[in-house]
Image 1 (tube, one colour):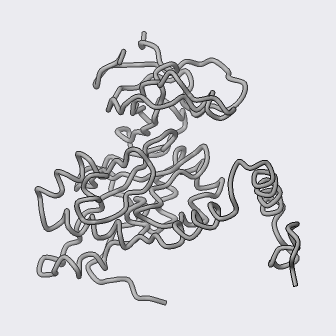
Image 2 (cartoon, chains in turn yellow, brown):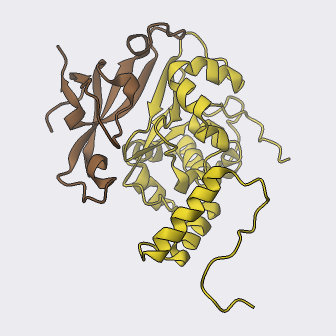
Image 3 (spheres, one colour):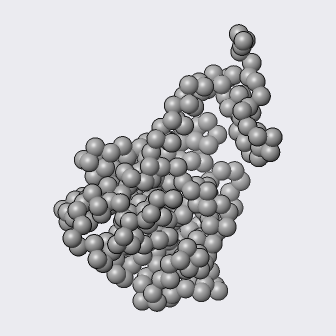
Length: 209
Length: 93
């Protein structure tokens, strides 16, 4: 029976990282000082884990089949998401960039881990890791190679470092062999990694593990 | 807005104590304005409880990778794009 308001030991394994303890201590203080409410933290977490790359994939698939929509997506990704009934999230501006035969984009946040969470869900751990954040700008072709993407020499590589308020979403190239596929089928080809720009979609959908 | 798309600019090389969003690897480097985004609140004051006003214009600036990393191993045309606030930019010489 818990009828008092101090907090109890967290539900966690004993080998909790130091950072997790720090975050919990910060949260306790912010709640105690009335800056945030515990319920707000829970709501934000619920929102974050309810997001998934399926939303970004819907945007990309529509752009692949509808050139006018592609134009709108490139001009204002936030408005394009709203048009499909998707939640573009709290970021003021989402910028979509298009991969072509001659230009390949990839996204990093060297200063922290900025990411278009509303359209892609929580970022993968590697996206937040120091090695990715440093090498994605200094040796991006090496990083792509480790992801299994050997970029052709005649392709210009553009690395986008999201250092401020903008969130970047990569529109990958529609794979060869997908000509007969419907918009819904195409959406299953668009992976999270391809919208970060570290992979290319293949004409057969990734197999769920 | 002080700068226009296509214009050559240089990132100020100054040190900055405290929170700021200008990565060290582009400080002092020259690049091209690719997009003029919009004005946003200043993270350097917002981080300390301020309101971030006045808003600062934000630019997407691209740099040749070879200019940023002397031993860059990729293609000559490869570029890195960084969002930089106006008060970190000056006209390139």
